[in-house]
Amino acid sequence: MLLKNTNLIKRMFITLEGIEGSGKSTLIKNLNNYLSNLDIDVLFTREPGATNTGKNIRNLLLSPDTDLSSEAELLLIMADRVEHIKNIITPNLNLNKLVVSDRYIDSTIAYQGGGRKINVKLIKSLIKSLKMPVPDLTFLIDVTVETGLSRAKDRAELDRFEVEEMDFHERVRRAYLKIAEQEPERVIKINGNQDEVAVFNDVKHFLEMKLTDNE
Ligand code: TMP
Image (spheres, rainbow, N blue to C red):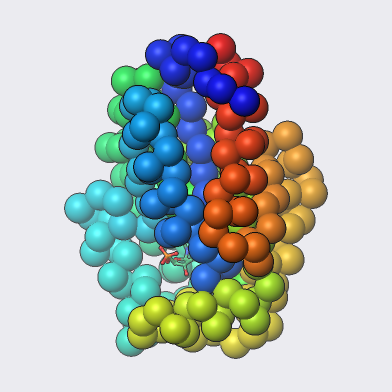
C-alpha cells in the first residue's frame, strides 16, 4: 500500500505498549526511519519522563531504592501524564503532527491495575476526570514474559518494575491482552516474539491502513 498525500495526515495520536523487553525501542527506531522518509511531521515522546518535571518523576519511579505505596505510584504516574499532555501531547497535536508515545494510559491499566492490583475502575475514572485524550491507535507488542524479561536482563541494570516477580509481569501481560480484546478498534495486538523486521512490517501494515483512512 502506498501513502498518497501525507500532508493530509492530521492530529493523529498513536501509542506503543507492551511488557518489559517487548521490543518497543527497536520498533520506534524503525518507525522513525520510515516516517521521516515519508516526510510525515512526527513527534516521538514517551512516558514517564518526557517533560522536565517528568524526568524527576521517572527517576523516582524507576529507582530500585524508592519505597512507594501502589497508590502513590499511580498518582505520580498521573502527575507525569498531566504534564506530558499539557506541555507536549496536546500542543503537538494542535500543530497537526503525528504524535507517537512510547507508553500511555494502557500502561497504567496494565501495570498499576493488573500488576499492582489497583481497582481498574478507579484508574479509568481518573483518566476520564482528568480528560486525558484517548489515542487514535495503539499497538500492543505482545511477547511472553520469559522472552521479555530475558531481553530486559541482557540490556542493563533492572529498574524498580523489572525486578518484580514473574507473576507481576504475567498479570501486566494479561491486563494488556484484556484491553486489546475489549477495544479491538483502537488496540492492535502485534506478535512481538517475531524478529524486528516482521514486527515492523506488521505495524506498518496497520499504520498505513489507518493513515490512508484519514486521507
Ligand atoms: P520504560 O520507559 O523503560 O518502558 O520504563 C517505564 C516503566 O514505567 C515500565 O516498567 C512501566 C512503568 N509504567 C507504569 O508502571 N505505569 C505507567 O502508566 C507508565 C507510563 C509506565
